[in-house]
Length: 360
Ligand code: CP
Image (cartoon, rainbow, N blue to C red; front, side):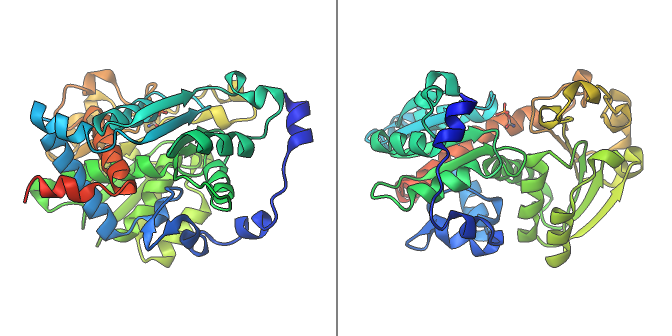
């Protein structure tokens, strides 16, 4: 396989130059007619877009409460087909996108490993994605390679049959739709205390390789007065590119290894696991870093409204005995992913108006 992959590695004219640009200078390449077309980076989302998606997700879940509403939703996009190309393991992102497609009536095809596609015969990932575009109207991908979704969307946009590419996670760099569902969750959890503006968010764990905290940090530029606290062991501190971004946008942040010291003032605590699948030697990383776990004993230390989040899957970062506490928002968070991804698909295929009209 590696032998073929090396032989068939393709060189696209213009890609190296495009790829080297700062992200802010790439965003237009993934828009069409003034709208977002491919979902590649969290930086594509501005406040108006985030507010619109959160509102749309609320309306979709409200409609889905009745059979008549479900029927209406299912008949919005029965003429569209989606490809779920998930060649890196996933439970939530895969299933929530799958369910979101079904809610809106799309039919879905899936590939969950390169061993069952013609990549095993040496077909390049770019040709594979181009092949999907011959059969479907949207591609949602999860891949172990950083920049995979960006490159395949860019390649498709040079062809006569581009289709939207949605990044369901590309290596350790970005997970924009997770960031979207995290924003939706924070806005819902804080609905009774003025929303996400002016809140203190504590991010804990492997901040160096956790793509969810990276993408979520980018989105904080859209909110007023947010303060971030990065709590990580020395080896997993947030990388400089994110800190430079926060400095550039005037977003306040602090770093500490003393988790308990920041618990009492947190409005939300966002836990993450150690991402040792990206380690060159995972066995060397059997350290569990218990000082960065949230335990049942910590519950009395946090505020009554503090939301506990985790993108999941978890290992041991949050004691299962915390799950029953009403502040444990992570199970609500994963379900929110289905509704906000349905909103995103409705936006991509321009059926938002039909949904808004149901409430006018
Ligand atoms: N949060 C998240 O991306 O979960 P999965 O890896 O299960 O999709």
